[in-house]
Length: 248
Image: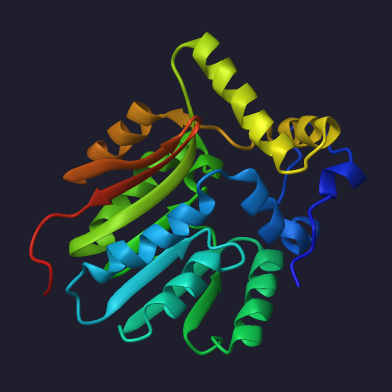
């Protein structure tokens, strides 16, 4: 059963003190569904895009897989396609929660889990690389090299799907969109105290770029076809595709 997120009602973290520990893992599925607009749309998008690939085996590597929601959704949505599903996360607490979900759903043999720093994890011959709300937690100095390695790992016709919190160049607009986001969280039952404490905890930990800042990084990494698929105020989902034959 999904546990309701009341984490920041219970704790008062220091600024920049957010970590994906056991406390976060315990309530993460509720936290992300109530905190990320269009989250369910991103999950529905993935099987549709995956189904367009003509790779005989669709190898999906989820960098920052957390509790495995994307991989689980993919495995269940396309049971007739042959997948190789790999989840990578640096948090053992998240992977433990993910493994519990896989066991409960009978998917433990279909998804491989690895604890690793995504900046060092070796990817080979991937059809799809996922980074949903992950790149924003990677230090800015490492993002370019990580994306370049990902680009080199993806087969022709494959793609990278990235969802991120984004910033905006105009301070007034950025502030307005942040306030609209906080209103979204209020509608989903978060108190002013919880919103304030979580914002403080994420300060300096989550560093967003603008839409064009992200797209520039993707271009510099060598992706040829980049599209903004979804945008809700200060959240965005991009696809960065590798051109070439759909199957090898």
